[in-house]
Amino acid sequence: MVENDICHLGASLRLVAAYCMLTFGSTKTLRRKDVTDNQSMNKPERREARRAVTAAVVGNVLEWYDFAIYAYMATVIARKFFPSGDEVTTLLSTFAAFGVGFVVRPLGGILIGRLGDLKGRKTALLLTIALMAAGTVLIGLIPSYETIGPAAPILIVIARMLQGFSAGGEWGGSTAFIVEWAPENQRGFYGSLQQCSVAGGLLLGSAVAALASTVLAAQTVDDWAWRIPFLLGGLLGPVGLYMRRNIGETPAFARVAQETTPAATSDAPGWLAARAFGFTILWSVSYYIVLAYMPTFLQKHVMLGRSEALWATTAGLFALVTTIPLSGLLSDRFGRKPLLLAACVAFMVLPYPLFELMLVGASLGTIIAIQVALALGIALYSGPGPAAIAEIFPTKGRSTWMSTGYSLSVAMFGGFAPFVATWLIEETGSLLSPAYYLMAAAAASTVVVLRLEESADKPLR
Image (cartoon, rainbow, N blue to C red; front, top):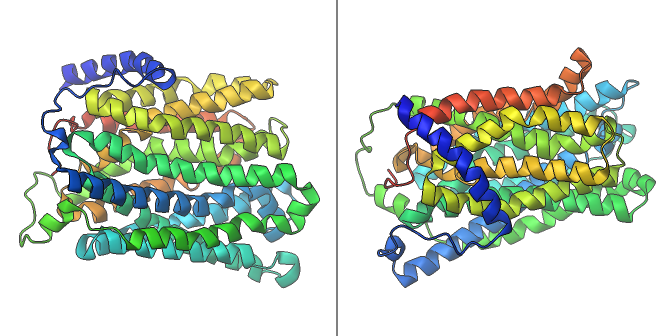
């Protein structure tokens, strides 16, 4: 076991170089070791799989746009709904409301995940996108604190809870759906499209917020234009709903739905969910520190303007979206663990010097390069991540238990990451606190990844 892990760790270092070459070079060198089965699907099945995955991915982009736009408008929302004489208290209140959306994610993961295991992945995904659109429109319509007083922040919290409940079921449901539709030897690539769509939703949110801050005057955004991204999300919701209504159920779920006894497994479902919990720590912390909290950090502590901070984050998100599929392809060829371990090593080593460089007065170009570097680290984890976490579980309970483990971890470590980062800076006086949080998360997930079995070359359970 130890020798295998050492081999994986060594392989992960070699893969960093290969990954960079693939990112900026040609993908023609990627060849399957065994292509004779042609993904074990006939042409109609492959067409149906592509159509189903496309619908899931587009819906996922819209879903995560809705969920993320709150973070990109955090500084405006702070003034509108959480007024206080102290700027730090106002910001903490805003990020606390952001984190509340994650508190209910485990509940959404359990209930909607169970619905997905009983009634099908498609039913669960239709419910999640409808709930998310409703919560987003609500935020866009709520009057400010100045207009309705304490009812304003209460309604914001309710809307975030509705979004969080939806997100809890969406992640596990869409991951199970996409991986179960994937050809046997391409689960890494197909699964990476799930994370690509999550990052795509964040990218769309960041780009819309950046565009609004660039095109419109700051006072106009503060007065009313901040509502536009939320109302736009509500308008896009029916598009995703329509696409998901016209897809079929996954072949894996259709097969197990006919079984009367659960699949045999050597591990209890709770223990498998605990693995998913630990696996997700770095994943969620890196996403919500680097991609959600960073615009606020850059504005408040690096002294960038709002539009500059948002465009820097948008550049990192663009790099993430374009490189996640390459990471998924690599995991099909070389295995999941080498890439996962490479990402863990990167986040134990890079955050401290990169955050320190930002804080000493780096130029906008340097800050964008740092955002891109951190995004590439996330891509190393996010490419193989969906397939790796789905492969932990048997199909019979995959949606429920994967959603539970993942959502609990995100609720504890990811959703409150902006709050924790803000609080740590205030308590310790160190602006490098977010870097330490990233490094600790990487160390925790490394322990879990080392103990996972390599699953790229095994059939889906």
